[in-house]
Length: 342
Image (cartoon, rainbow, N blue to C red; front, side):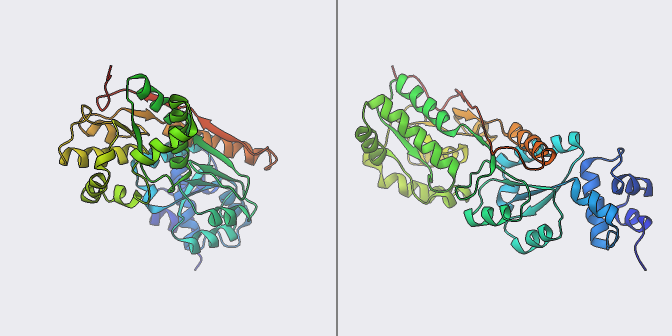
C-alpha cells in the first residue's frame, strides 16, 4: 500500500494538518519542520509520482554541504544558525549533506533535491567544481574556489591580521611570528599574508619581513595537532624554535592560540609577559583560556545570514546575477593575552 499523510504524521509524531501544511508549502509549520516532513515523505515513497509535491520539495529546499568535522565545530555552528534563521524568514527549508559522503549528495543532486547549495567551510577544489557543474546555484561560505567563479561570503582575513600585527608593532613589539597551518585553508593563507603585509609595512622591506617570518614563525602541517589538542607535539615544536621565539605570535585562529597558550605555559613561559598571543575568530575558547585571548571578532552568524540572502536573490533572478564576493569586516578585541611593551 502506498503511504498516506496519516502514515507520515504517525512516523513524524505530528498532526496530519501539520503534514498537509508542510507538503503544500503553506504557513503554519517552521522551515525546519517542513524540511523534516518532506524528507520523511520522500523516504517513505509518498512523493513518488506526485509532481506537485516534488516541485515544492525541490523549489523551496537549500542544501547545506559541510564536512562532519565542521558541522560540529564552534565556529560553524554560529554560521549555520544564521543560515537557518534566514531560511525561516524566506520560507526555505534546509537539508544538510556531508561532503564526506559524496555518494549521497551526488544522488540527491541528480534527483533534483535542491534549488540551491551552500558549501560551508573547507572543501576540495575538485569537489566544488563538480558540484557547480550540475548547474544549480552554489554559494561558498568561508571558502573560495579558484577554478570556477562562484559567489562567496567570507571574512576580511587579510585586513584583520594586518590590523592586529600593526597594533602589536605600535605597542612596541619588535619580533612577531605567525603560528598556524597556512596551507590548510584560504582563510589561513589570507591571514598569513595579512601578517606579512604588516611586517613589510613596519620593517620597511619585503626581505626583512620574509626573514622575520622565517625566523620566528611556527607553520607547516600542524592543523591536525590543533584539532586533536596535541599539546605535547606543540611543545616539541616550540623547543625546536626556542632560540627564535618572538615577543608575540599572531595565530591562525583561536583554537591555535589556545593550544599554543597551554604548551607555552607548560614550558614555563608567561603569557603575555614573555610571549603575547593574538587569535582570530573570537570564539568561545578565547574567553575560557587564561589569560583571555586578544582576538579578531568574526561576524559568524551574519556570514550565514548573508549567504542565505544571496542565495534567495540568485534563485529569484534565475542565476543571472554577476558573481560576487561578500567580505565581512572584523574588529580587534583587546583582552589579557597582550600588553603594552612601552
